[in-house]
Image: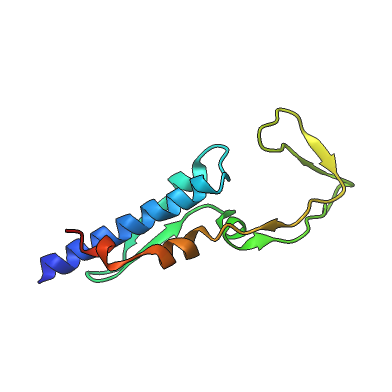
Length: 116
């Protein structure tokens, strides 16, 4: 019985990890792949585990963000995706969240834990 529990936990957490990575890649929010590669599994005990995204900016990718304004300068400086040049702007528009973890949790089914 313990082996079955352990195997189900391993299968489920690996499936969740793969689904989160697929959601990150599918949303097109990749430049270096750092966020997709930071999805990790931590065992909390015999029957529980945590799948997390270990980057500072993961929460903004998950939930989105509002307007961004410069704090100390007159303009923001950033490099848009796919560009080699920097852009200067007085503000940056809100960005919607991609809900990578939420969608992965909703997509998990019993077959992910107990494959045939």
